Image (tube, rainbow over all chains, first blue to last red; front, side, top):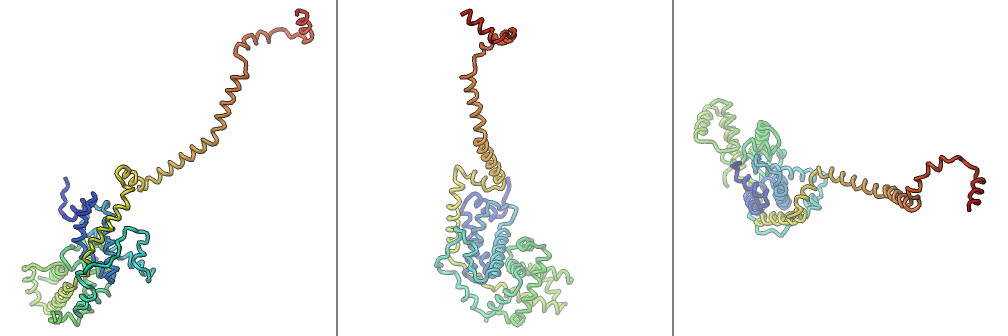
Length: 201
Length: 167
C-alpha cells in the first residue's frame, strides 16, 4: 500500500476520484498564495482574480494527470506560472484584448460577478505606505523569473528544489536568479533600506 | 566561519529564519568583517521589506466562484462520461481511437463498394441458374446421345423417306 505523506496529495487523490469537497479544501488553502503570485505577475486585481480562478479550474480539469510523486503546491504553482506566461504572451500579441478572450469557447470559465466584500481593497492596501508601494514597483521591474523566484522564496513553503521545478531550471540557476533579483532590489530600494528607515512610520 | 559558510547562510536566510546556533556563528563572523556586516544589514532590511508586502486581494466568494465553475465543468462532461458510456467517451478521446475510426471507415467503404459492384455478379449467377433449370433438358435426355452420335451418317433425304414409308 502506498503512503501519501503530503496531505495535499492525499486530497488530490480524492479529487481524482471526483471528490469536489476535497478540491474546495485545496482551493481555500491555496487561493491566497496563488493570488499573490498571479497578482504580482499581472498587476490588475480583476484580471488576476479571473486568471487565478482559471488556475484552479485547470487544476481540476488536469486532476487525472496528477501524480502523487509531485508535490501538489509545486504542481499548482507550475500551472499558475504557465497560465500567467500564456496571458503575458497573449497580451503582447493583442494588447487591447481582455482576459475573457483567452477562453472564448470555454463555457466553464468562472463567471465574473459583482464581488462580495473583499478581504482587502487592493489599491488601498498597496497605498497604505509609500514603502510598500516602492517595493511593489521595484518587484515589478524584475524579469519574471527573478520575481517569481523571490516571491516563492519569501515564505518557507518551498524548497529551492521546488522553486527550481516550477521555474524549470537547476537549483544553482534558481539561487543565481534570486541573488541577482535581490541585488537589483537592494539597488532600487537603497534609500529605504538604510538602517532604521524601514520601520513603521 | 569562513566566507563560503557565510554565503551558504546568506542563501539559507533568503528562504527561512536562521537557527540560534547559526545566528551566533554569524554574529561572531560579522564582528570581524565590518564590510560583510553592512551587507548583512541590507539583506536583513530587504527581507523585512519583502515580508511586509501585503497579501493580494482575494474576493470572499473566490472559492465559491471556482466551485461553481467546477460544477459547470462537471455538468458539461457528464453526458459524455455518463455511467454506462463513460468508457466509450474516454476511449474516443484517446489518440489510438483515431486509428480505429480510420479502420472502421475503411471497412464501411469496402462494404459499400461490395454492395454496389458485387450485386450484379450475384444477380447474374442467380439468373443463369434459373435459366438452366427451366430451359436445359433433363440429364436423361443425353443418356443415348453417344450411341446416336456413333450411327453411320445417312443422307437426310434417305432417312426422311424411310421414316415416311414406315409411317
